[in-house]
Amino acid sequence: GVTDSSRPATLVCGDVTTMHDLNSFYGLTQDDAASPANGARPPLTTVIVNNGGGAIFSFLPIARHGQDVGFETLWGTPTSNFSFERGMSAFGLPYESASSSESFKAAYRSSIERGGPSVIEAKVVERSDNVDVHQEITRKAVSLIDTILGPPAPRDGVLPLKRYRGEQKNDGSKTLLLLHGWMGDKSEWDEVGESLGVDISDEWNIISLDLPGHGESSLILATDQQAAHSALGLDAMQPF
Image (cartoon, rainbow, N blue to C red; front, top):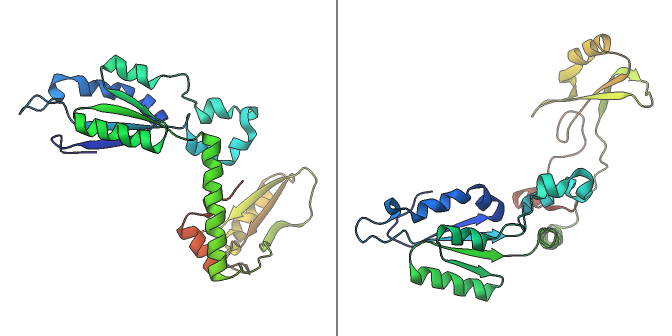
């Protein structure tokens, strides 16, 4: 981003992002970062939101598998072994830690009044607690929407299928699913499906289907409730 270096500015970033770009703080200590007019360094307050790693990944279904899939190492990327206080000390930058609303307000006020570059580490809830909080907010939002708009329409969840090798089903066989695009239907794949039925081995079942709102599907893409859920991003926050 770009800001007026003569006026106080605030940069908010996560703990993992900060570690990836840690060397950028060095630029705040250089002489060419100072104002030509008065020699003052840019009044930039950097707020590091520390929730112990890559919290966004805790919303993915893979998170429930934990260390069975190396979640912490590959996705969670915990930052607890790094001291942001010592890191900022190495650059000679003022540092304050805040773990409550009141302490953050005090640290932020102090940074603005002091001027120049400084860093505040805001220690917020852990990643697992963050997921619980968001899912509880989602449940309450969904409940409120359903109360206002009425109960959602029943959905049987069955999509029309077409098999290109008859109705036979082989235990342990592989399945190739052909999906049509927007405004299409399963018949778009008829020529391809028939050709694949000849060209690939019998261990493959080849099927296509009509997605909701397309072809012979009785399911609609969105009821009023679903439209509201989608607009508010609630579907992505449903517990997995």
